[in-house]
Length: 161
Image (cartoon, rainbow, N blue to C red; front, side, top):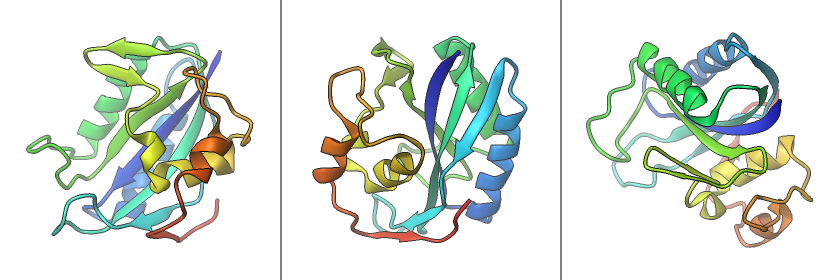
């Protein structure tokens, strides 16, 4: 089993309900245990003119291989109406593998640690609810260092789980 952290986001079709449905689907993945889910947070879209996002982080323990998990996550996204019309466009659900154990993954379909996560408060602060600040990423950075460099700006904590 490896500990995996997933970023979850939605800004269409009742985003909080989209995340709750995703959590239920994650709990039913084969060879996987849902360990925890952060509170939900709202933040502005990275692109102007889009609805606000609701985000969270989930922790899983799994024996699935990285690309097997990616395929399962994309199936959940598709089941919840995800359409890939434009990069960073509005979406019913986005599930991203942030960390996969202590692995560095550089595949055409998957980069882990997730690119730009160090710049995204809507990823780091929910992650900190589930992982110790002493967590060391496969590339050597610690969660504490990432948090120190990324202020809690533009986030609104909307639920606790």
